[in-house]
Length: 313
Figure 1 (cartoon, rainbow, N blue to C red):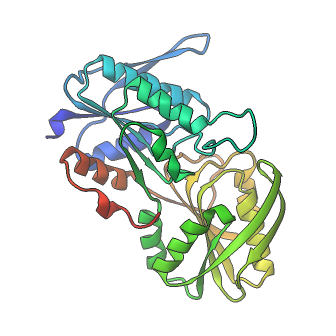
Figure 2: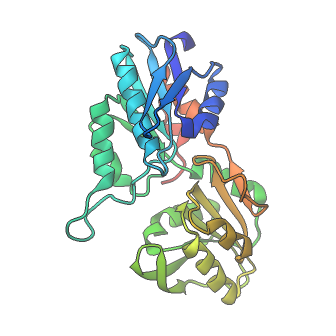
Figure 3: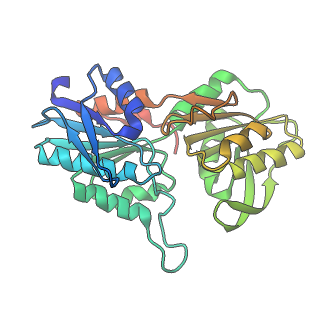
């Protein structure tokens, strides 16, 4: 059965592709990226994929070359007569652009969905979309996995006393509430206001965190400004400790430095985006998501249900 699948990985997610291939007991396919002096590049699949299920692994974090490389690999597989093309996108870039929140702006997530479909993708597998409705932007099946499948068992093993789950903003209330229900603890919410992106104007804490060990839950951490500010306010409100679980470690700008000097005792993330090896420090714990994706892919190949891999939205 595994002779009929071929796993490829873009240059940004070679580590993830290797891990998935190892879990499935196959070799990662050979892809060569030819780069030209003007910055243009051309991926080439160096082995036959005719009549096979081709699984292409690539997170589309910046730069946008990562997205375009994925599109070119999909097109190459389609033109090489692949039977089915599955895009495995642990991190789906442009997911924050899911609607028109002011006049004359693009809906980037819909554009990315259109590009993937036009390139020839048959199915998309991703994890913790910033906005779940993005699944509806596609005309092909989308399997939307949840980081909670990894985080909740990890938190249960930690057996944190006097635990309280917190949402760093009101948009994450549903996610945090689901964690709190499963872990059997209370919920707190941070209410923030912004004038421009990545800059917090004000923040308040709703809920009693005094004498509690707080775990902040979010789908991604970008500049780390929100989480670090939330951690500071909760410590001022009497919290005993602050941890955070965030699926996608975007960690742009001075995020690593902010986390290092913040009130956060630990940041738990997945490997959907590789960390900067020159900046990573002891406060950051990484959980591998490759087995989760490999299990889902195995069930997909065997036409089995994947519902057991969903814990919480």
